[in-house]
Length: 168
Picture 1 (cartoon, rainbow, N blue to C red):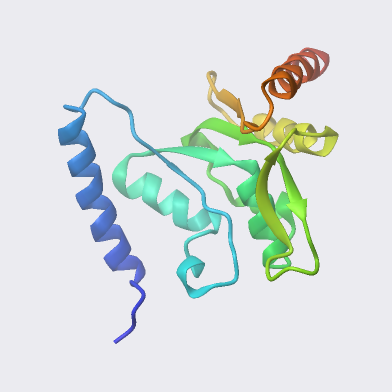
Picture 2: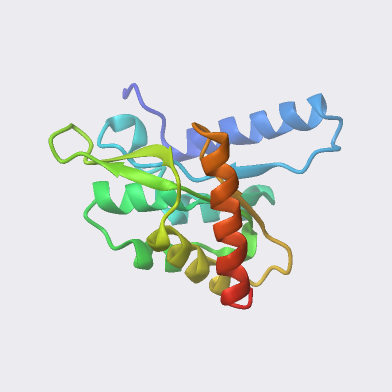
């Protein structure tokens, strides 16, 4: 007997929680699932790769929130290529993309962590790749940067300029 749940047990819990949320919101709220960042602990085993979220979206007709920082952390903490992980996302389910800069600390237990820093050129370039893979006409883009309002506003100006420059 393991302390951690199997994928099928997780799927049963997801089904139950979707029902609870739909009841709570009286079926008037569109639900979505967001990818998790991978950290090397048993709790994150098997639940941070794109295939897991693709399966959830398929089984339960859920949209996805693609957090690119989480995807990047998952890649780094698993010694994987972030572009390859991005290609494994089933983008037809993605209706929101979140971006921010992650923090690196090679001396800590986890070399990459979600820090919600202002996005940089690399983050915008990764966003552009994700947008080009996405067949949806309407995608929300969220900058997950909450520590400084003026910096957040500046990041949105940079995002607008970046999207216009790339004709998105």
